[in-house]
Length: 111
Length: 111
Image 1 (cartoon, rainbow over the protein chains, first blue to last red):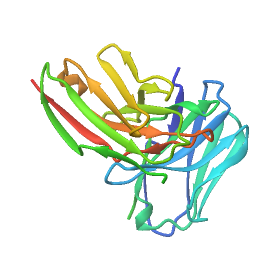
Image 2: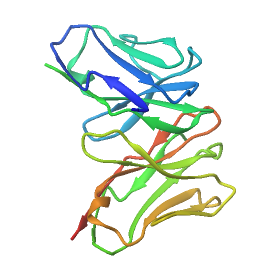
Image 3: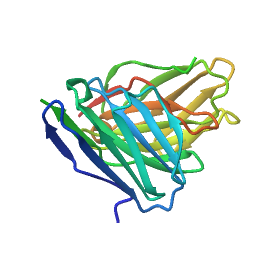
C-alpha cells in the first residue's frame, strides 16, 4: 500500500552510461515531480508533470529526460551520466499542486 | 526572489525543550508554506503546512507561526523528543505548485 514508490533504491554505474529511475503513485494524484537532493541535502525541483503534460522544467541538462506514460507513472531517464549527477533523486506526487508526497528516493552513484 | 532562507543549519536541544527553526522568503506570490521532516535514508514527509491567511497553525507538538508582513515563518516543536531528531525543511510555493525548499536544519534532541 506504498503511496509513492521508486525503483531502484540504489543505482551504481559508470560515467557515460545511460540509466532510468521509475516512479509510481497509487494516490490518484494528477501531478508528479522529480527532485534532486545533493550531498548537502539541498532539495531542488527538476520537473513536474500534470496529467502526462510537462508543466515545470527547471534548468536541468537535456541529458535528463522525464517520461510520463500515464498519470500514475513518471520515469526519469539520464543519458551520458557524469560524476556530478551523483545524488538522491526523489519522486513526489500531489493533487492540485499542494500536499506533495515524496517517494523513498533513489541514491545514484556515478563512478 | 525565488529563495527561501532557513536557519539555523543545525540545532541541538535537550529532551523536553522547544526546537525553533526559522525561514524567510522574498516572493510575495508564495501562498503555501509546508514543513517537511526527513529521516536518514527516507524521503521528506509532510509535517504541517500553512497558508498566509492565518498567523498560526498547531498540530500536536508542532506549530507554525507565520508573519506575512515580515515574510517569515517558523516551526516550533514543543516537548522535543529524541525521535524528533531529523532534518527539517521549510518550503514555499505559489500557484504553480513548484516547491522552493530552504537549506534544511539538522535537529538533534539529546535524551
